[in-house]
Image 1 (cartoon, rainbow, N blue to C red):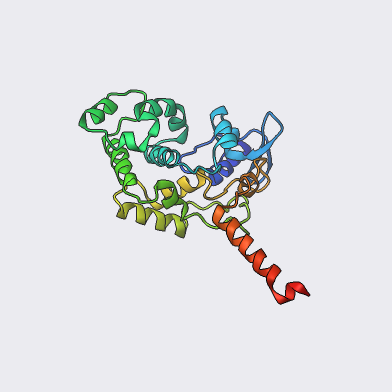
Image 2 (image 1 turned 45 degrees about the horizontal axis):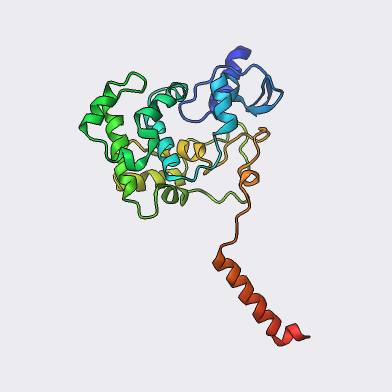
Length: 250
């Protein structure tokens, strides 16, 4: 196997679902490549400008809004059988076609909208996937706490979880399998364990940037949580009780 083929094989081994990178130009270690900006990043992201921007600014960053999660869920479903670069480049057209991925808006789409989408050359024209996007919006509206809260419940605890090394990135996990099963039970379509795990990677539920990548870990990117009024009240009560206790007097 020549050097080019070897680099390409390595980049593919760690790439998320649907990403089919060419060989990175400047490998610096297993799973890492140095870009033109001198930064070490996951090697799959070094093949095109689209992948670099997606990797640096979006992939693995926490998405907490319902519509934001729905967008990623929909795009992952449309990606099935295609390259992710195709979806990335069509994303502006997808956003225009699907009302900026507003769950409440897409849930109201009807047969006329389906016909409109099938005629839209800017997106992937697949009737089954279009129907799934509309059905998934309706299913999302039925979740009492919203789509984001429902799916983030499957995110593993990041505490103690180390970034993977090259070759350690899974395609499915018990968590993604359980997520897919629960989604299908609630009427969602085009969501299998592999797609569910790709969604977890894309929305920051897991951090699969290769160890050594310049993008900071999720734990470092998350802002400090503000204490709720209830938590502040609880701490104040504990402090008051401690001050009044006999031990405190000593």
